[in-house]
Amino acid sequence: MPDHSFDFDHAPDRHNTGSLKWDDMGRMFNLSPQEAATAIPLWVADMDFPSPSAVRDAVARLADHGVFGYPADGSVCREAVSHWLATRHGWTVNPRHLLPLPTVVASLCLSVRLFTRPGDGVVIQTPIYPPFRAAVQDAGCRVLTNPLALTTDADGNPFYEMDFDALDTALADGGRGAKVLLLCSPHNPGGRVWTRAELTRVAELCLKHGTLMVSDEIHHDLLLPGHTHTVLASLSPEVAERTITAVSAAKAFNVPGAGLAHVVIEDDTLRRTFRAELTGLGIRHPNMFGLATTEAACRHGGPWLDALMAYIAGNAALVRDVLGQRLPAVRVMQPQGTYLSWVDFHPLGLAEADLLHRVRHEAGVVPSPGSSFGPEGEGWLRLNLGCPRALLRTALERMADVLGK
Image 1 (cartoon, rainbow, N blue to C red):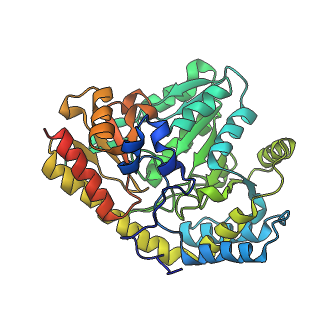
Image 2 (image 1 turned 90 degrees about the vertical axis):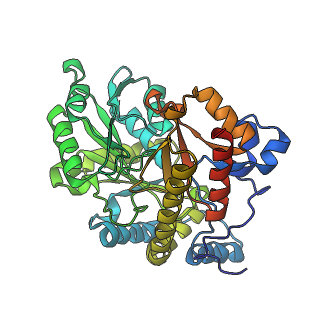
């Protein structure tokens, strides 16, 4: 098979491959078979690009061996992840402080269930990736929202900042003290890469109120040029002792189907509690394909990732250019990280239901609806930039043709 690792302008046809993004799109969004056959999916956050050749080679070696028994304890993979965190993010962690589990979402759910009781308050910063709210509600806890402040950047584009006064109030929870803060860093859907100063203030407030910090950093390798990620737990030993960090190769190297994430927990008591819960749930053996893909990505994926993010930056520029020319009223939030674009369609004066109907059924484009990220997202659409530029251009032009009438 030709190596398309660095050829982001072309991608395999994913129809009829068991792909959630492509093959379940029609069912999930009530498209007719004819609509689904030609629709362009810009919704769920996986990319259409093949993973790096080293990752695919690791899978091929496993497949060629042909025996898929129980894997070893994953220590080699943990060492690779720890090395990646040290070299890519300047965060030195003991590989023994990493615990494997299937997904980052599972780490959010387990953290809330383990370190709260029903009725406790958990803070989320909205608009936010939908599983954050679900993790709180499914545990029987109260959702304490700390809406991000929508402002504008130096160029007049929409921009999110944290409202620290409101965060202080939410964490206080009327004197009871919120038990957990679920932080999304970088932010999904807005693409903000939080600064060290912002994260330091978050940590100060959480320590003040005795709130455990659970930091979803699955997007932390997806940085657009000029931006640097700060790992929350790297701020100080005191912060590390009150932080659970969730990481995975799934987003950056396009391997969510391999089913592996890690939580990094430096505090012994928190880590023992979390490990005991994993054991009690029967989560003992990491997915061997997840171990292989993650290790290969961490050891050999850096150059591919750098090339990917340069390409994503070009796709982000394309969104600004096409929508700026064709639909100048809409407002595009410039992502600093992730491969997601968050676009405000409010100025078009359409109710969200009408907006979605036109985009899905008339334009043949399926983005993520803004309201799924909370009421603050209504009227926005999240666009997945992880696709060939020509396909993205077609999607944008289709949307502009319909919405510009």
